[in-house]
Amino acid sequence: MTSALYPLKFLPLFKNVIWGGNRLKNYGFRYDPLPNCGEVWALSSVEGHESVIANGFLEGNTLNEAIEIYMGDLVGDRIYNRFGTEFPLLVKMIDAARDLSIQVHPDDDLARRRGMPQGKTEMWYVVEAEKGSTLISGFRHDTTPEEYTAALNGGHLMDLLHSEQPEPGDVYFIPAGRVHALGKGLLVAEIQQTSDCTYRIYDYDRVDKDGHKRQLHTVEAMDAIDFSGIQGHAHTSYSARLNESTTIAACPYFNTRILPFDTPIHKNLEDHDSFVLYLCVEGIAAVKSAGIVVPMHAGECVLVPATADQVELFCEGKATLLETTIDTTGWNDPVNTGDDWIAQYIGDLREEQQY
Image (tube, rainbow, N blue to C red; front, side, top):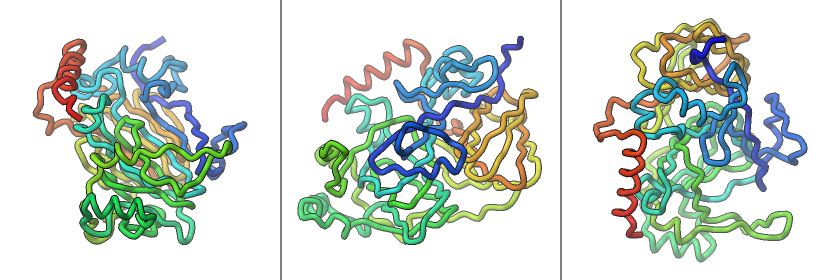
């Protein structure tokens, strides 16, 4: 039996939420007895919600356990040195049958001051959009905290927010600090920093099955919000080409490219010091590396280890993948490993405990 690394596939984690729908069943997911599935976590390292490997000799182990064993060979040396056994990205499919709450996420600095390892920057790729569906991304114009507070307390926050009607294939980059919300009728793929921190600003006064309103975080959100207005449209402009990878999001936390293809694709990975993550958003595809072929349908992802020299991609008819890596070339801060990394992190928290 070989112990060499290979492309990893994961069991989905299903999340039943107040606004969730049932369209994910159309993609082959089964989550009975849950009444709905608002989110399927395709890949997670969040504590208590770690993805479990579904294939090969590592089957049954969590992603975190695999990183603990293989370290930089799995995720890349610099990535391991910075994040340890926590995988730095969380990948989801989100089915909004009702409007999601209006919310905001903290950036790294604020998150660390509040005892969390990192903030939450994310991106959305719109898979489905019902006619008339909308989403919120930022403010219509530069806004002051006083204007925002008055609108929130006066019940007309929506008047300040930038809204768009997305179409399938649209991409939205949501940096930490941007107020945002998905509207009903949208199915999106989401790639984000590993964080489950959300500050809920407004939730339409709806209640759960027990008649309780969900908790709001209006005070916590104030320090997180970027009050800058959106200039032009909020979605990302790009032009995808068949059988080519096109960048749709690039930031310090992830680089994501879209790859629509209808013929086998071969990629050389020798210059990478990063894992490569493939999330299928359309059709049926397969990833081959180290002699192992791993199939996937829309909503599933495959993690190709950093040690892989090459990868081959296949599809039935046509498929579309989101291809994600982390570019560490711009990292100019020192990295630490093991206890040194933990000690540095704790020291930073003590210095920043001023909120």
